Each structure stands twice: as C-alpha cells, then as structure tokens.
Amino acid sequence: MAKKLRWTDVQDIAIELEEHHPDVDNVNLRFTDLHRWVMELPDFQDDPNRSNEKILEAIQAAWIEERD
Image 1 (spheres, rainbow, N blue to C red):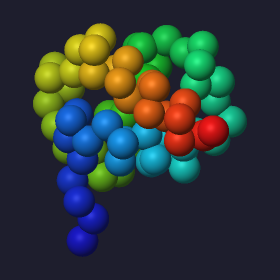
Image 2: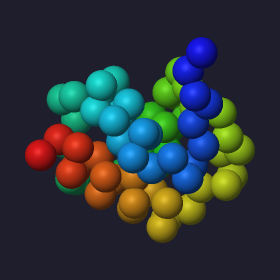
Image 3: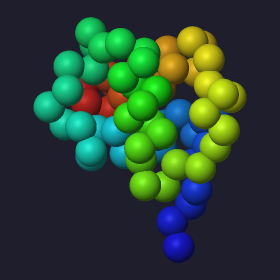
Image 4: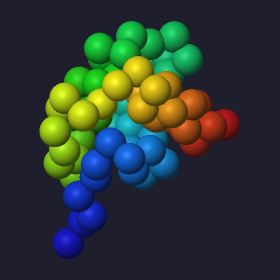
C-alpha cells in the first residue's frame, strides 16, 4: 500500500509531481496551480488548509532539483 502523502513530505511530493506533470515549467508557476496539483496527487491526503507559502516554496524547490 502506498504511503499517504502530507504537506511535510516535500521530497516525495516533488517526485510525484515530476511523474504527473513532466512538461510543466516548474520554475515559473503559480502557487495556486502547485497547490491544486499537490491536492490532485493520488497518494496525497492532508488538509488543504495546512499548506502555506513556505511549504509550497519548498515543494517547488525540491521539484526543480528533482528535474535537474
């Protein structure tokens, strides 16, 4: 059974985002889009209101690094 992702699972979220959105410009993205994409991940289960700009920035940075 797959691990259920939470906002704090930044690295795992970044890996899944890369798998689900490989063609997205992950450097120039809107946090509203990033938030929605995280919420849409099949393994993600956390409160949508628990995210904040700092968490989204960390996810974005990890995603950029994942692609490099």
